[in-house]
Amino acid sequence: MKNIIKRYFKPAAILSILLAMVITSCKKDEYYNDGGKANPVFNGNIMQYLESNPKFDTIAQIVKLAGMEDVFKNENITFFAPTDEVIRRTIGLVNTPIPELRGGLNQILFNSGRDTLKTLSDVQPAIWRKFLGRYIYKGSYRLKDYPQIDFGLRELFPGSYYYTYDNDIANIGVVYNSVNGVKYVGYRQLTISYLWDPSNPNNFSTVAVASSDIQPSNGVVHVLAIGMGDPIGEAPNEFSANIFGFNVDFFNDVLFSR
Image (cartoon, rainbow, N blue to C red; front, side, top):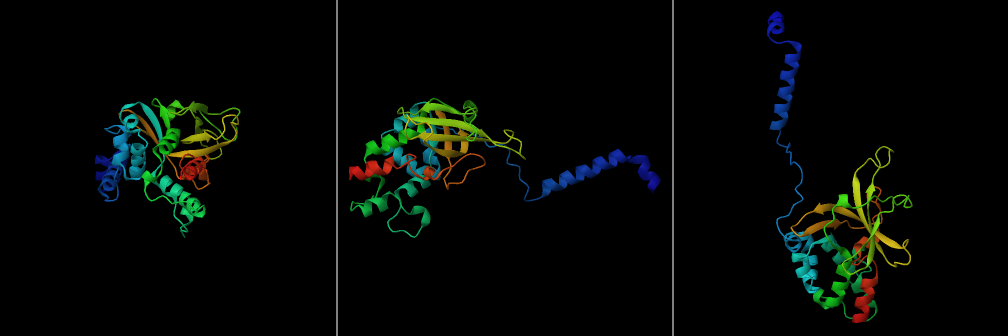
């Protein structure tokens, strides 16, 4: 029998057969499912993308309240999109036991004796418009279009400064993460840092991008991560990511308007 096997099945052939059997067996496993590469292209404009995704129901309403629906439908823009969770945490609840909703805008209004917000339309359209503009940039820019930033070595890799849709200033850059102690060979992480005071470029709030390069028909969407104060890889992701507008300016404007 051994001689027959050796005659008709040489060692290399036997190895090939075994390998084919293993591969075939893997394909039959119910848990094995190769989803392939994610498709970044969305068949519709940015407004339609926001309306189609449950994470952006509230953001889509704010776009309409701000009177910017036409911008999101027809203009060529890049949108660093905060999720609905950012709005939920920004507005917050009064005397809530939920830690992440403590200290929101409604608590501030309540403590100051002003009416709290019941609906999004309780905020003046001009205020929504002002702070929504901080997330919008004219033109289409994907991750590959932004320069490298190293927050520990900014003199060499500073990212670059960009004007928002309404001419505020932010620094945008790509963090090149390390792998096994080797710098800059790991995955790329897009970040945006809003400058509170353009005269002091070292005073900024940094937010990491959770999903980049989503491509509707009229631009690019980068989805921002929720901030817990902990970095994502080597990219800072500060707690200001939870505040609409990146800092307390939104609180102040709403407070003084009521």
